[in-house]
Length: 482
Image (cartoon, rainbow, N blue to C red; front, side, top):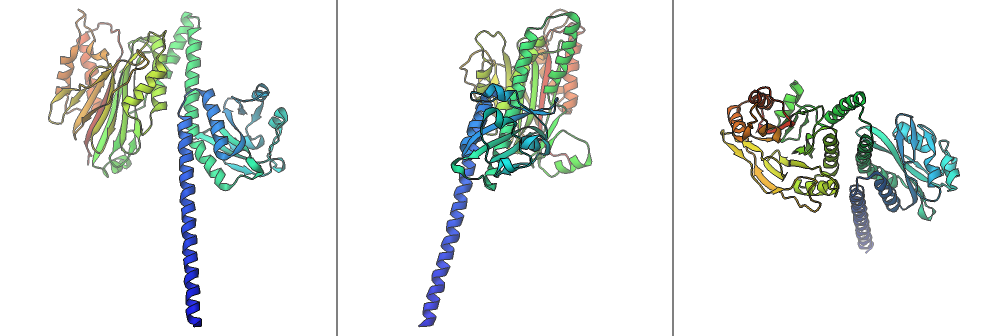
């Protein structure tokens, strides 16, 4: 009898243990799901605007809400002065707070900016790093806080902190991990917003600048450097195994490429008709095996076109996400670019190529139709549903198109500086000559083809001064080179 009772007790204990383990696992899954949804919420908030002041408000409000904190602040780094400053401060004493500057290393925020380490403080007044400079100005008691660095491209651009957990509780280590996760997408969005703000300030400053000859020449040289700085340097190579980066002849790069079955290479060239121009291109990886590329042509030339081009490129890169289609991207960028009183616009072609499958999803905003050069030698003009150029109509909805790139195929995207180049008698280069060059140079490498296309246009022009920029982007999809 005692044995039976013992067995029953053991069985009951086992059931309780299994139930507790199951309950603990369920709670863990629920917490992880809650954390994922919170991060998704943050991502939606910080990507909803590219205006820095609006973004800062969203960051602080979202951080306070998710962390269940009384307040939140973003303190930015001034690299030139080696200081931290409040770019945005809310409340009655906001102007006073914006006057406050902290040296790098001063206070808890300065310590985080200096070391790059996150910190959790349960009693701020007892922490040796604590500085009451801000608290005295606003007469706000700080009990506990979390402070994490905002890091973008390996550089600390500021710190994010939340103050005083509600109900008098202390922040936990899990709270700190969550805030660090929030800081990652926040830093990227904030840097894009800062770049966009800098561009808008540059546009305003240039519009009000007196065009003295010596100063204008200096500005043109600076504008050229800035414009070229927006464009990718070198080519880009992606394998179906997820290797990406600038092409290289090193044995290390060759070893990585040979591990995959398919390689996609992107190459481009640009030649402004003046010191600065309106043509632009870009390409970068989306995830491990997708290539995003874009080529556009701003309607004007010179500094106004260069500034419009810079704003457009910033919007394209800032708004593009892994879930977004090219049509959705152009629709979103167009809404930002459109102005009732603006006479500037940009034709544009952008696409997302799946390296492994060869599926190219693209959208066309009134641009020159690209050519596809097939592995068998056929040269096809790519025709799809077109939209208006960016900046022409505010409610324009851009469509998506699909085409397959097989192994050995290449797509050639260009601006009308190629086809509309003129000779001494004002005859145009045209599409037929371009098609002939693409057929003739089918076996050439992308670098050789770029050079041959430009050289053929120059030979046709025979010294005639060209009034339009030239830009060409080539994407090759080919079997891996062993």
